Length: 421
Image (cartoon, rainbow, N blue to C red; front, top):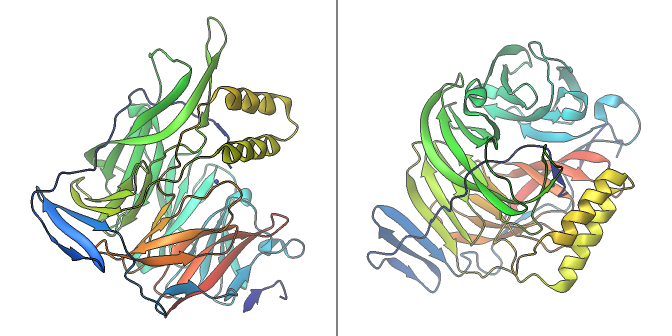
């Protein structure tokens, strides 16, 4: 293992307004004709030009699978020592074609660049609103030619840096103020254009206590942030609202316990989307056309009384000793309705060669991530486990890169070999 100078998502209060409309996206399409498939493979059929792939069994057989190596090839991060290796609020990390690792270290408003062996090379950026500065650095992505794209949430700004880390240009998403909303997704397509999801602000509408699920407008924008096309409205996540006050109403919102939440992942010139209500993921073109539906025949897990109690304990523990925050959490937990089943799955990630990785939804206390892998045609291959407390940021053809936290919550960026047997 190469050690870099070591010499070796909590649910909570939402700090944004909510959209005014609730809609349901129906991905299920009735089959028009029978298709291919059998006991050892998926059933594939076509309906009105949409391919539907249904999976019941894994394609990987005994002795054939993928797995992460037991120890990381690279580990960047330490508790004490050189500050360039002390990580704080890592938003994302990417591995460039030449092996360098770029980390969006949002706690210090910097991009940190490390060589293939984990040695620090340069840090780029600082807090501020000027060129190459960040108000709230959310993530970094690698574009062709190792151009770096960053998103600054506070300034609503995308910035480009060259392969050497020098600032090139930036632009703001001007249409956000016109639409009256905030972005829930910004991701580059393969040609450099952008998928942007906008959650409209809640203005001029009666607000009621209870569950709410609003829609997000998906847009296709060019490389300068101008809107090319509106792709449609897609469901967002389930939230629970609590109101207080008299003439001036204050709205508090929290993510619903075990609530459904929209999941997405961009690949080349299309994107995957799922509501997570059922194990069904749609693949859309950059024009918003539904091309394929990938399904897994697996029922959602049941929510038990023990799960609910453990969830409540964890929420109150995370609330800490702050009176206002703890009171809000206690009120939400006392009134929030719990669903009978869990979401069908968690996050979506697409690897470098087009395989779709779908994270299994975990019960409270289950710290071991398990990812079901589907190939680019929608065929279910098998399951890959990743280490506890490890969040995937990038999957290459033979590596997995992500953030890992140790037992005392010290942040690390780790690179694991992806072994394909």
